Length: 318
Image (tube, rainbow, N blue to C red; front, side, top):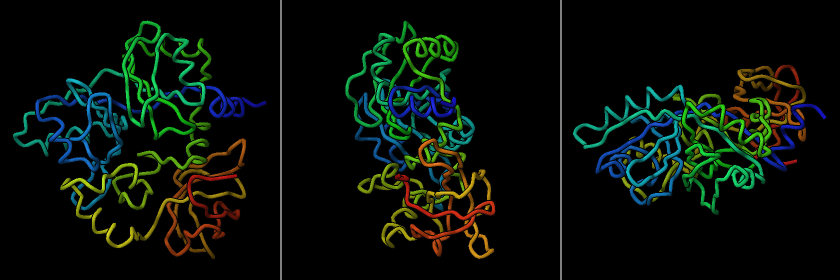
């Protein structure tokens, strides 16, 4: 069995560990929940300590500036954001803060993804007991003596958790989890799992050029019952029109391996672009990418990198 197949099997049947390129911003102050509720796309004010949600930071025209995990603690709210968007997120939050008594601090933390059906048992073997958690629910405790926050992460494939560990304890945490049975996983295997499970990430698959409706993530990252927030009018207008957009993120079953950035064509004309591509041990060459509405119906045959490809809804099934 190849190394990629072993990693894939561990993620689907046991436990696998991946470094996640994210950073954590701590938000404090007496009005932190109210402030974030008025800026982000999901319901923040109604969350108690130990709860969380996924949310988007939009601009006034509805373009996605960042996706994030919001984790509500007793004395702070932690925003887990793509590492290369930390500056942008902090700058925009400072801009929107005006006179609100909230403060922002970059937490010296590293983020891991521990995925697979045996993830909880792996944490148990490291001395960290994790109860049944709802999505984005979180607890803190010692992982082999290392202070660690663990959150149930619905934006990871194959089920699992994100772990926030001190940046100076990364090697120790990785070693402890490996000894407990978690197999290190490559980015390529993680991409294959994300495509199969229909989990786009900010950076490779979602950028500030996108509207949330184009990504297929509206239900996970947006509350239809909350009031005004930045970009809410665009979301509401699209919802009223049935969510119709000019392009949408789709899965593709490929006839040959492709790469991010490859054009999706139909009869020689560009109709989209690949965002993430991989070779799945189960499904073979697969990808996800944005496809124009004229060709994004499931079953449509297009072309990618000179080979036929079939458009499919995400997540992909066998």
